[in-house]
Image (tube, rainbow, N blue to C red; front, side, top):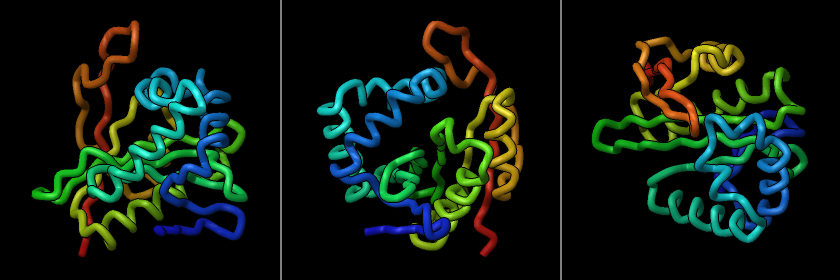
Length: 179
């Protein structure tokens, strides 16, 4: 199993079915914060059984090298997610999305977790370019990307449509593997 340590209290691991109750609780307690930019994740985790199925599907995606969904864990309890998605093995590119429990925001955990997943993507998966797509008004997410060496590339016009909202312009941040 992949294990990436932040420190003695926090680690990053792929989801397992043992995480289902805590992941379900994390998503439910952060629904208001996640609703706008993680609607699909929320939709797929509406019940504990749905969360179990979500984790089983995410485990299959890891085995198929289609997508890697990692949990940031404190004492083996999920408090955040990092999703390495939209993988293009031919171009050696991928995208990372991330979220963390509101109780743990502002502590540098997302930054440290993103650094670890970025290193994993470059060193273990041999990806060459990673991207993060973020809403410009999400200043905390922009800071995380920048602290991890991602550089603003361009504005993606009307790139994301939150439910019941007009499409939003999003900012593209990229980082290349400098090997």
